[in-house]
Image 1: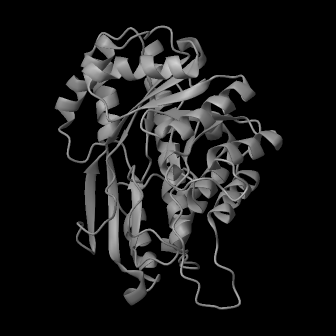
Image 2: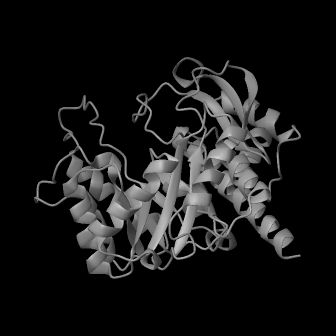
Length: 364
């Protein structure tokens, strides 16, 4: 269950994001229910003839190890494998979602699958079988929706799963909001909630979305860019303007785009940039490509951030602590994976604290 006062970050199943989860303070972990998206497998070119090329099976087993190393078994976490739907079966003949979740269940992780409305029949059947095996319901993620279609999608999913609404955590995913007008999207979501079937009967209701760019190529280097946190704006707008029968839990994609960037690989020429969440905006402190200019750029970028009004404090979270040490002590530049966990851990901490304050004010 994802109660309305909990934050449900949708995170990519990558090392940086899992490390971010492991770096959170316990009081922050207690207030989040993560949803992990297993990414499409991208084969890497192996130049060393002595090294074996990694297979999709290797990739799935790596994700299992991330869970074992980075997440507490007793804490609830959801897994959605829709991006792997085109990969086919593993070498053992099992669907990757079933293999991954079965392994985690055997290791006694508190994990639930997510049923998705845009996947193959084979994938849906795998999730149904997992749901029946676990016996604790499932997440139901609906996107690519219109007000007219959402109830049809819901009825079809309930019928396939043979579950009642009180066994399901409904996740309404708006996906990327980059090109959306915030006010128009608030009105759209209000219309959805005014017409949503079984609103009071779902075990949980979650509203998700994100608007971080898929990459930073459109942002000029050596500048600080402010990007509205549209998912946060839409959720707040819905809560503050609509007469809701039920307040949905908040979810977003942290500092990532919903899709996997075509530039993502083990060795991208990403810029030395810090993605830093603030009250209403993301601030992107963007440098230049790390291949040409190196990681030493992070020293000056971090120093600029810690001397800006955007910086919270060294005590805010482990991410802010690393930023402060990088900009002040200049002992380590980190690498791209480290900066992903730094930004993600900071973002999660910001959102949890914002939700705490919101519900304190609501009950005052």
